[in-house]
Length: 491
Picture 1 (spheres, one colour):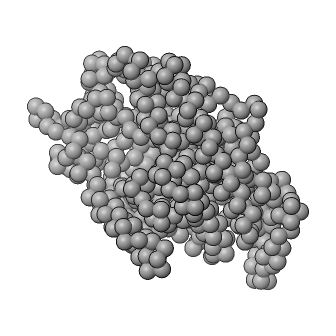
Picture 2 (tube, rainbow, N blue to C red):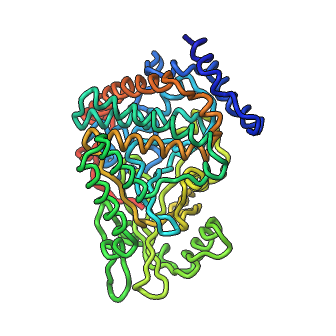
């Protein structure tokens, strides 16, 4: 079987004389990778006897997070199998590290589940669809991202009550979308591959065409149109109106604890210290050095206020701040989000990264994988009032951001979304790795596709088992829960 896997499609590497020899060699390296990691052995998932304890891994991870927020993270993870999957990137990384690997390295997202894709505005004020979460980004084997994406559709499909056939169609669509998009990138002109993107208008045309072929329904079209309209409304002025009010003539972020807590409400003396304009000017100047270009609009803004925020699932318990700035006057606001950048969950399994700062790791990975990135995306290292130095990455809080809610998708709509996510991941990997080598490994056949589908189904079983173990740990008190942890506030 392995021999057939390697020998399959030998003639696909026959190239016209005009193709540069090094391009043929790069593609052949992918074919050679089938010997060390046969495509047919990429699935199904079989846990080994020495598999790490999932509760112990999560408990260890919690030691690097604010203890008063960790129970909230666990509460959110316990809601459903998909919520647990979203928060369990470390568990899956630990498992992937035990599987055969291609060693075809790309810039990984590290957490490429279906909810980490969405719409956002580019600096040119166009709305595009792309990946949008890079906390775990790290160089590693390309198949790790694809396995996580495929499994996310298996887990979410079960949660939505899809049939076995409908779930299989979604998972397969993600893998086929990836494989075909990667082959197109490998065959494309160099700059065409680098510039390739998927904007909102293209998405609308694509989904309407799929509807006409009866592979999508009217509800899917309507949901996309609604998502596009909603994303365009979610600009900085709308966020400003919802999050900011005037107190004694000064702009202040509205308190909504524990989700949004103004800095002065955490520890009064810390709030006083951080409100010092000289300190904030120094921090903003240092952050500005990480932004692109010799001159940047951030230089025209001044600091007004900040608050700690809590959001998502995977990042709950890490420090995140909303920073309010103003430009020409109080009607010219800018809201930035500064999120703690901790070591990627992949690092312990793949070795140390190439950046000194975890914030720089996130930003450089995002800039490489995305077709276009936020002009305010940068990083900062800050020593807090507690004496602890933390890395952050900074971006706009909201700027034409939105997405399609997977909890409301129809089976046909979910399959189409899976295909688009797979294609989007392939475009990111084509920029952050060797697209010809990956295409050479994938080939035209279905060996890899079948293996990933088998992996997704069996790893969804593992996710269900881990969730049951996790819930037992919360009930027994092995892990802290909201019901057993007293309410405290921390800086």
